[in-house]
Length: 394
Length: 96
Image (cartoon, rainbow over all chains, first blue to last red; front, side, top):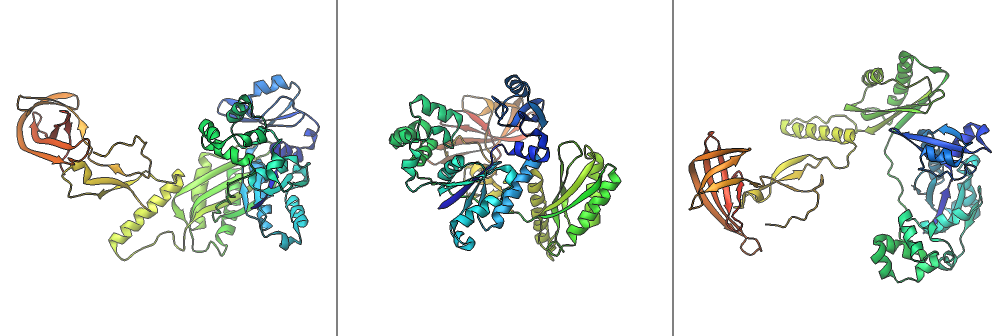
């Protein structure tokens, strides 16, 4: 399976410097806050000794003249999602492998673009030049990743045919394994992929478990991992940009009403109900704001949605003036929010099923801890064998 | 009894119902319950309303061999107890 790996190193820094060119050529540290702790999200190449995950205090002691920037993860994710959408628009199956890293399946695409070179050029053009992507082409994810790491910024590199021979002299630090595994490989004197490939599979598995099998295979140029394209949920998005940032809640409510009117008037949404509404906005001189609202019952009407959203915003308004507003409706139901039935018992089951679906969305759980009593061995002489709690199936 | 796998039950696992609960019982020479520690209170057994035995799964390492007693306690409650013949431990369990 021929794959392309698209790697954008230091994506947060590149997004920030694209918005604020004064950051270019300076040591920049992008900071994120989790609870009371402030840690490094990303750093520019000039911020020597600063690595992601480091505490802010450590970062400042390593690089005293660093420029601190408050991180805006939502904008970085949005920028990367645009890259993924652009790659998918070119017909490729794309896997999101983390912020700044994606894989695209190339099989069958080259004839559509008039050859492999044009295909690779088109994929590179899917990424804004300011992000300086590196693109690698090879058979398998690991080899494509290695190829991308060797490509100059803004260009592509394709690995030659014999993967095992090419990978042999490369460092084990390139392997998709934890820092601890790599440390142990070095401590065993296994510094290169060739050295790992020369070890028998059994001892590696004994030391590292399933990871041992994977790194042995990767060192041989064998990559069993499949490309996993994302599951696309049907959503409806509408957006507005304001000439003057909005502060008053009444104005934000009017803008939301406008977005809801547009969303519910779409032919694909007519007659359908939404379970979740997400409002996002860029805040003037502050990180982006997002509010996710899960409705108690699916909502299929603009006025009812507006009432619920306004009530929520009164309780937790945006933290500052909004420069724009994005509305997303998701969890779209079928033609009707409730399936009514002539038979009361069937209606009761339908209502129960609907309530459980709503709960699943609200909790964000794949499996709900809801059970029903079922007879398992009602004839058993042992009382605890007669019935059991069975997970309720939606 | 089927051996406990030791796994933490997940939302998708079958969960047993009416599992017996270990309970402290003082019994007489004929193994009839005299007092029961029920909800941290020691209660006298006023009467034994019913008594039966079950012997099952003799082919397993730990066969099911129990003597059940349906008793009335001093506070008027009716509970079902059983003594595991193999381990001699007492349990409370609803019958049915």
